[in-house]
Structures are given as C-alpha cells and as structure tokens.
Image (tube, rainbow, N blue to C red; front, side, top):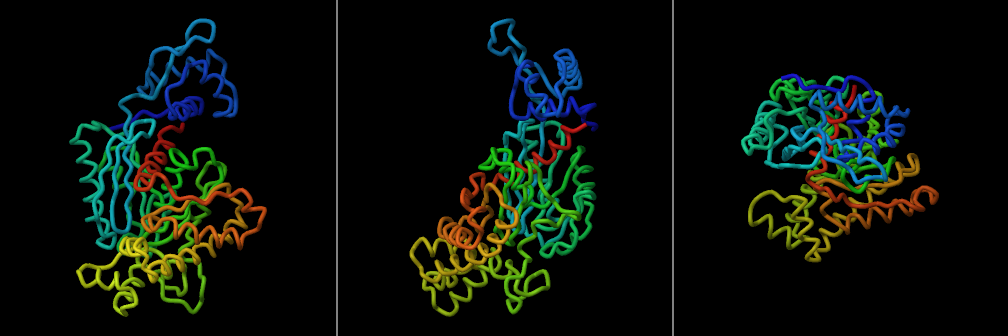
Amino acid sequence: MKTNRPENTHQAALLRLLRDGARSRAELNDLSSDAAGWRMSRSKLNTELDRLIELGLAEPDGFAESRGGRRSGLVRLASATRFAGIDIGATSVDVAVTDGELNVLGHVSEPIDIRSGPGPVLDRALDLVGKLKEQGLYTQLNGAGVGVPGPVSFAEGVPVAPPIMPGWNRYPLRETISQELGCAAMVDNDVNLMALGELHAGVARQVNDFLLVKIGTGVGCGIVVDGKIYRGVSGSAGDIGHMRIDENGPLCPCGNTGCLEAYFGGSALAAQAEAAARSGSSPYLAQRLAEGGPLTAEDVAVAAMQGDPVAIKLIRDGGRRVGQVLAGLVSFFNPGLVIIAGGVARLGHILLAEIRSVVYRRSLPLATGNLPIVLSELEDVAGVVGAARLISDHVYSA
C-alpha cells in the first residue's frame, strides 16, 4: 500500500516540526525559518498545512490560546500515523509500534540467536510486529526502521560482512522488510539507532554532538555530529569494538587479535566469568555455574553487587579498556556528551566510574572540562525509538 509523502521541502520541514507535538499555525510560522532555512509567508504556510491535511499527513487539533487577536488553529500529525521499530540484537529482538510523534504505543521482545540466520530471525521479528497489530495498535504502517548488530551499507540497506552474523552478508534486509510489511523501510547499524533514540527522547535531546558507546555482546559507537548520524563513507564509522588495544591479545570474532571486543563485551565477559568460576577464584560464579546454565554479564553484575572481588575486577578491567579507547575519541572528536548503553552497561556505576576515571585522566583537559559521561536512560527502548526516528526522517522528507 502506498503511503503519502510530503510533496516539497516546505511540507517536509513542517512535518518534522510537528513530530515534537501539536503546534499552532502562528508558532509554525515563527519556527519555519529555523527548520527549513527560510521563512514562509503566512499564506504560503497555511497553503502547505492545508495540503498536508488533504494528504492525510496532518490534521487540525483545535485552537491555541489567543496572542491578543483571533486564536490560531492547532495542527498535529495524523493520529493514524504508525511506525514500526525493529531492533535486532545478537541475543534478542525488540519490536515497537509508535505514533507519528514517536511515542511508543506497544513494545515486545523475545530472545533470538543472530547466528541462526536471517530467515528464522526475521520470522520472529515479523511475528512480533504481527502481535502488535493483533493488539489493535495499527492497521497500516507508514514505515519501518530496522537495526542489526553489524556493519550496514546504509545506501543499499544490507549488512556487509558482519562478524557475528553468519549468513547475513548482503542479505536484502530493507527490501524484505518493506515487502513483508507493505511500507517503506530503512536499515542501519543498531548502535546508530540507539544514538538516534537518545537524540529524540533521551539524555541527548539538547545535545548536537555526542558519542553513544554500546556495550552489548560486542562494542560499538554511534557518532552524532550537528544533530545527524555520522556514518562515514561506507557506513563503518564508529566500529570501535575492533580497534586494537594489544597486538598480542586474544583472538577476536573479526579474525584479528587484541581488539577491544575480544577483551570486553557480553561474550568476552561471559568467558572470563566462566574461567573465574572454574578456577574457583570466585565462589559466587563457581556456585552459579554449578547450578547450571552458561554464565552471563548479568551474573557478573550480581556477583559484584554482593562484593565479589573477582567480579568487581572484571568490570573495572573492562571499563579501563573501554576508557582507553574512548579517551582517544574524546580528544579527537571533542563531544558534548558521552552515553554508555547496551546490556553490559547495566553493570552500572562500577563500570561507569572506571570509564570516567580513565577518560578524564587521559583526554585533553579542554575536551573533558565540561563533558558528562552518563548511562542511557532509555535502555531497552533506545533502539526501537531510534528505528522509528530513522524511518520517520525518511517519510518526513520530500
């Protein structure tokens, strides 16, 4: 089914302004010059708003309070607008449906194994989208955004040689999702989507230049410059998990040795925890392993909260290595904010304190003098909100 799109840049700019909530026509007239780079005349603005209403992209929403004369009409995005956000991780998939303003209307999640390949994983993701439809959250989607835990050719909408995603190389992901859901689709790296989510609804709402470091099964970095994702020439910008920190270090899934991801991340931390359990150096982890089931980063977090010195050391060692890489990035990029996100980031303030200590000590004082380094507040919904933001940017463009 075809979804209407704005017909020109004026309409696109107005839709992006309305994404932040209903506004009066007078307020939109004041803001249009900042959003579009030029000021529309009052008559031109009213013509474009009326056309958006005709297209079903916007709708009247009553009247604003008087500024001293006749009350200005309020306009909002069409209440039937729906976007799907699909955040595919290494071990789970999260799916949400949002309205046009990207408020999450429904959110579901299931464990998956990305290594099982695109067929089984996408079947589960699409089933979850279908569950939200069965709940009456939408009848027709205006678009779907998708994130995956690996490098993506943004222009083509396909993963490219993703180290932890066997069978996904150049899989036509954008085309498949678009056909299955009957709407436009966009695909990006999951870390970029988390950064977009924080930009739209998280701690970075008022920050135009920041870094988001995701520590999950792997490690990656979303780079936001002037309010936009920086992807690099081929889409691989921010792949810090495969920056080498020790040439004599352990083998990484990418095939190189000594990468940050080989030292810290969900997989590396689980392996280190199991080694500590088997050696008996951590009684808590040894007991947890004996109870059955593989150890995870969450087990390390619980052990640390109980004062287990081995678990605390594992977290601090990981934080120190992340801090070493991040310190160089901070000196180079000079961001206004650093956000630590992802499942392993739930190790909490022991991890955060170590990262902060290394960055503040090693980076240039001018770069860190007013630099907050904080944990994500959106957590599980950052990726799906960012996915909805990604596709809305596409739909709300001329």
